[in-house]
Image (tube, protein in one colour):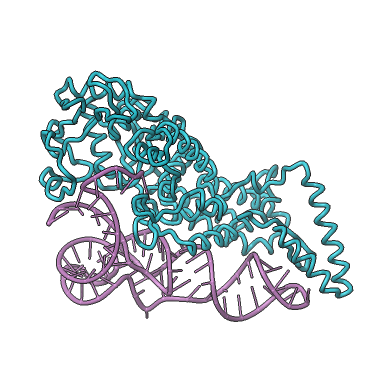
Length: 477
RNA sequence: GGUGGCGUAGCCAAGUGGUAAGGCCAGGGCCUGCAAAGCUCUUACUCGUCGGUUCGAUUCCGACCGCCACCUCCA
């Protein structure tokens, strides 16, 4: 079955057919680096990460470009407040952005272009638009002439009248048309600026993405993603600039991620109601945050609150317990035809449901449902199975880890024991458990409970079962 | 004013023109010296309200109520 993507441009589900079957190109609008990124930013970045992982899972080659806006009013203002240079502030926050992304398990994009490193490309693009009569210069600033682009408004579904009617923005009298926007801003004293044919200045926000997307992905890209707040005017303007300059379709599929909310309101930097991703990462494991962020479909709003994170924590615990139990069956054994356990069918069912969910506009919530259904089926049969079922269990483990990897909710490395001191550590813990067992045998509950409690303090949790006492590390939080 | 979206069990959240995935919580059970953890079972005659179309609607249409977002920088 083919994939379908909801295209904001047509406002409907469309079959996904990449322009070049050899390589899918994706451009994702990254952050303006004037501060640390918050959970809302993380949601968009994470969805992009999962889209890419899923496309790779499906066998596509993917080239992902995620930009950094590193010159902008906000950066200049913030830098002035802090008494550092705009360049320095952008650099610091850019590094912090990569660090936070990495901590969330987001694989780096193939290219992370920065606006300030693409000034010549932007100037070229503006030059082209000037030559085509689609732009004009006023006092060293260059404006885009919106009425030259007949399709203006096609993405945001807005008519010219509508755009003017509700305008709450102060109109710059010098512009020919209130809808015109700047592609090049004449330098103001003390602000960072670059040489251009129109004098010193800096690029407007929209031209940055047009130029960087086309430089790294060509004139037509497959998927352009970003938060829904960017739909207008940012993406509308990108289309206007790019398509008028090249005459080609700029992006074939526009994907917009719904807001992360807090107390029912949009989480936004200007609202002062945001949770920094790094703060969340200090309080919850990566996989828990990922699970939370994909527990709703990406086009539906999702409310951030501690209760929801706790729920995800519980769900992840369930998943990890199952995977931990299955891990010992992993590897080596050839799937056997004769072991026709119902579980085998359950695995196939899970795989097809997972694929179907992800194929339908990346429905991660539904995909999680498929995974947890299998978890439940595994748990039910795990205790009753004998050695003959081992190959099937290995299959289950493979299928589960493979799909969980696509979503990034199972960290195999973290759960594999691979340290040099692991053996000694385990021996020490086992020794303590032996002592505790002796205490239990003589009903010395005080000593026994002391060992149990103290180990718990060290994040080692022990369980007394009919088969003896076992232990495990608790997930760090 | 224009544009778009949402309203599903205590909570979160999928979904379909034919009768509601999954997770959390809660309650029962197993296990335990007691716990914890784990496993397991149970939990929406019902999908904001009112109409309409239909053999049949939560799913389609209309109205209404409530909520959110974009139209200004914001993922």
